[in-house]
Every structure is written in C-alpha cells, then in structure tokens.
Amino acid sequence: MPFGLLTGLAAALAWGTLDVISALESRVIGSLRVAAGMLFVTAVEFAVLVIATGTTLPRDPRSIGIAVIQGLAGAGAYTAYFTGLQFGPIAVVSGTVAAFGGLTVVLSVVFRGETLTMLQATGAAVATVGVLLTGIAFDGRIKATRFAGPGVVFALIALVLFALMAITSDIALETMSPLQLYVVARSVNSGLVILLVVVVARTSIAAGKRPTNGPSWSRTRLIGALVVAGTLDVLGLMAFATGLESAPTWMVGLAASLGPAVTILVAVALLGERLKPVQWVGLAGIALGIVLIAVP
Image (cartoon, rainbow, N blue to C red):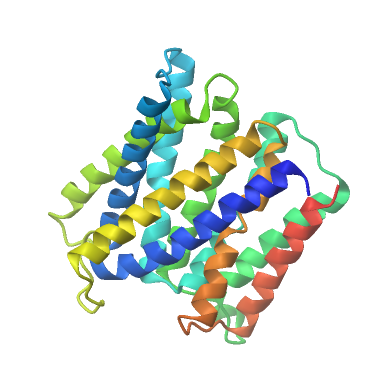
C-alpha cells in the first residue's frame, strides 16, 4: 500500500472517530462549544509538543501568513461541520463532507500542478453526483427536491473549507514542519471560535446554545470527550501532514476524506440512524468515485 494512502487512512480513522464523539457532544452542549473546546485542546497539545521537542516557531512572514490562513479556514470548517452534525443526521452530514477529498483532487490540479487520468477525473464527477444525492431528500417530484436538512448546508460549507485546508497544508509544509504549522493554525482557529462562542452566547442563535431537548452528561464526561476528540485531531493532523511530505496531495486528501465513512457506519449501525434509498445511492456514488480517483 502506498505510504501516502496509508497515512491518509490513518487520518481518516482518527477523524471519523472524532466526528462521532463530537456529534454526540454537540447535542449536549451545542456545536460551537464543542468546536471551541476541541480546538482549544488541540492547540494546547500542539504547544506542549512544540515545547517538548524544542521546535522553534516559524519566523518567515510568508509561512506565518499561510498558517494563519489555514487557521481561519479551520475555524470556519470545524464550526460549520459540528453545527451540521448538531442539526442534521450524522450519516448524511458526514457523507456530504466526505466529498472534500474529490474537491482536494481538483484543487491539487489547479494550484499544485498535479495530474489525473481520465478515470480519476470520472471518479471526481461520480463523487460529486454522489454528494448531491446524499444531501437531498427526494420524494418523487422534482419540485419537491430539497436539502435533507439545515445540517447539509453547513456540511457543504465545511466541505469547501476542509479542501482549502488540505491545499494550504501542502503549501505550508514546503517551508515549515507540521508542528510549526499546526501550533500557529490551531492557536488562530481556537481563539476565533472561542470568541465566536462568547459573541453568539448573547444572541438567540441555536448553534451557540445548549440544546433544550438533548441528553445530559456529567462535567467529567464532557471534559473527557473533549480531550479525546482533541487528541484524535492531533493524531489525524500529524498523520495527514506526514503523508503530504512524501506523497501527492490528491492521494493523501482522498484517503483522509474516508473519515466520514467511519462516522456513517457508526451512525447507521449503532445510533439507529436511517438513510433514504436515494441517499444510499449517493453514498455508493461517493465510494465509487473515491475508488476511481485512486486508480493510478
């Protein structure tokens, strides 16, 4: 198995497990609080790693600027994704976000000069159609076609931003180490999301509130879940960055996009969520597209 594919799959496993934890916790304390808490834990853990390894902070203005851009994109991506998980079916939202791998392939061609075969291009198109089928609820009438819920709208936003994060990571790693990149990026996005939580708490926006009909968790369980989620994020990011340093961006990004597949399997098998037939077809299309793109 190619090393880039292996590291991407390792990131997918970490992020897929993280998604399940975050989705459940979002329904207890709200998506913005979960995003802020997890990103804060991730930032602290990267800071500890930087200190423990004696890694210096980046000094080149261009490198710092790219890391900040990645942090801004990450703040939007995680906030949108967790909000989608709070308001939409876990399986559908995760299935939609899974297509960020296909978009990463396209961006890799446009901005990184990587090439695809005709078969891989076909796979990208199939995956895109799969996303559309996964994200809509169709009852047999064209005029009645609609998004399956507000969660999918947030998932589409997250999809674009996660792909942007993949490309900026690849660019940034040309001039800095993974620890240098992520300690800056996570400091930026955790600070932004924490500020957003403070601002939104003064409004009536549902994403910033504790769900009134959600389950109740103890403080210990909440903190423990945030620490586990943050640690999984660190592991996923390091695996992802390691792959980017030695393999094509499209390969690592595509493999990492399988993370939501883990979430979907758990949501359907263990949490009792159900998909419409057309949405199963959409998921199959995403899977087929991923396979076609991965063919040399």
